[in-house]
Image 1 (spheres, rainbow, N blue to C red):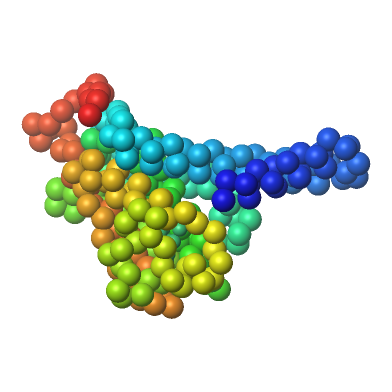
Image 2 (image 1 turned 180 degrees about the vertical axis):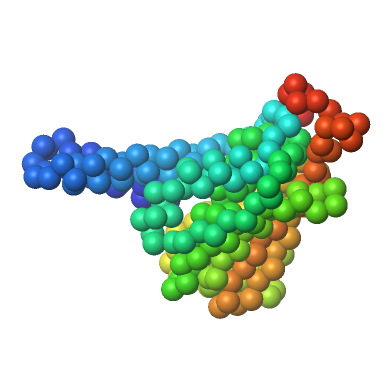
Length: 231
Ligand code: ADP
């Protein structure tokens, strides 16, 4: 799977190197593809390395007070080329005030990016993804919804297991390794959160990440001075 983005990077770089492209628009387009595919490769390698670190219990989280709205915005920015080039529309809904959690910002971005990338990968005709952030009681809830292929009833629990891929996703020849969601689950649980999956075959899925909210200042809670915890 790592070879797919690398192959296009090599191919487009080769074409740029030959210097035979006539329009500057093409040069820009190919450069954009190289940049986006490099980012995709980087994300895949990070997933694999983090997965290995988690397996060995070597992964460290740098927990700090973060606003999940920033995490969602960063994730959408990182995926912007992927989203637009595959023709998707992303609908977001976020609270007006900060949604603070005590979390590692990079790990939370990895969670969000994995869920949005899956929503895109496992969709068909309906190229729509919903990303919602909500504060409810003492939780911050992130939902990523798609109108894609869905997950068969008996497999909903299993997709969080490492290497597990549903029969329909394998049959549809979508590339994958089955480590992304397991990584998501491990990260979320390391932050005292949990993950829920709702899905209807052929209609779409909702992945819900529920994290303990950090109390706001004035509630007798921590200050913004960035308490940094290593766990
Ligand atoms: P990968 O996509 O690399 O196979 P993941 O661990 O991210 O691995 O996902 C595991 C499996 O869960 C996928 O192979 C697919 O069968 C299923 N899955 C994940 N996200 C979705 C989704 N949004 N819609 C339908 N099936 C999904």
